Length: 464
Image (cartoon, rainbow, N blue to C red; front, top):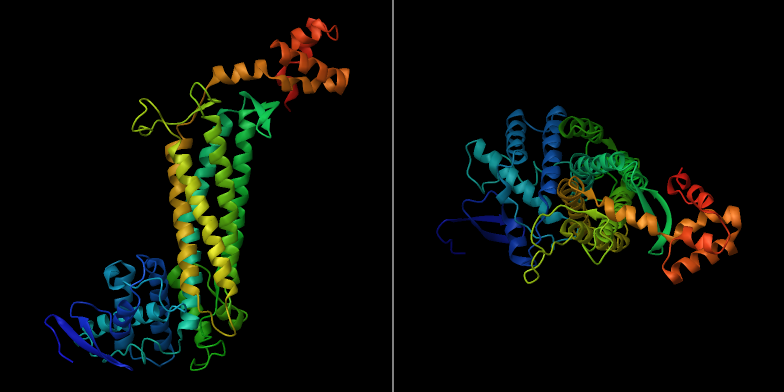
């Protein structure tokens, strides 16, 4: 094989492969680049970092077990630390649409760490010595336990460090509005029609309650994510892994990740199926439904400004139309709704991919974890933006709210207990037909005096 300038040749079990000289990755990575030119989606870096954390833990564990020299272990750990500091992100170019087990991305990490470790030890890239990408980097491991464990670690870390802070921030921002609007009356709506009154703060309390429940649901998912199948190796039996390896690995990973990592009670279920990830996606799907409801309420309440409800003012962030002057659109609402629909679609993908597991391994992991991590990132970014660029600046149109309450026919509901449903209906129908107030209708029908109407039809008396 001819070796072009600025390249090197590495050899794997299938033969020689030409690799750019400046790259730390090796033959199997290059084969994946060549064989899977599919789409623009790349393996998420959070997965790369999670695999790297496992490799760092393995180097320390093998040193402790006397299976790796101090020199090799230290070089591997140094290379891992560089990756975890984002110094080599460009070395991980693989498409999501590769081997569904994640084998090629797993070997991508093995090759980068091995080549960088060898460089640190004074050897050349591609030498596979003194640190070997299989014999040393993959010692006591298989893609099936490493990639499965990395999916759970990456999900655990991104949920805790990215999604939860954004979710809590949005909940707290809405809570401020709940308190701010606690004494402002608005008209409730059922089936998009007028209903009995409530305080605007009560409406917002519903949003806060939904997000509080979402926070609890996410927190409930975290412990199971920390139970990983590392040490199960190829199919869950632990072949090639020494005694005590799994126990030492989870201790190292707990220290490295800062999260509670434990050995899974059953390696077979955790490597062949990924139910815990489907459950996480289901939790995100529920959150997506919540966010659509909140954002859609905001869109409707802000509709107008002259021919819609126009009960609230949303922040004016940018012009809304390229042709209609002065138009402002609820763009933050639209963005978070689009994100939520993407999350719902990802949940379908994750569910379908999970169901395709067979026997002792899973062949569709990469699309599952790509979709799940995308959902987490999109939701986190969208909730942060929605809180800061929409909810914080939201104000009430008090004049419209007051007018709506004053003219609402739904206030007749309170007359049921005094006059009965039929009489109250008669009052409401007359008021609607003649475009008069409930008070005027009641008096003209001779069913109530003006004084009785003032007492009974006071909206504040209708709200607990």
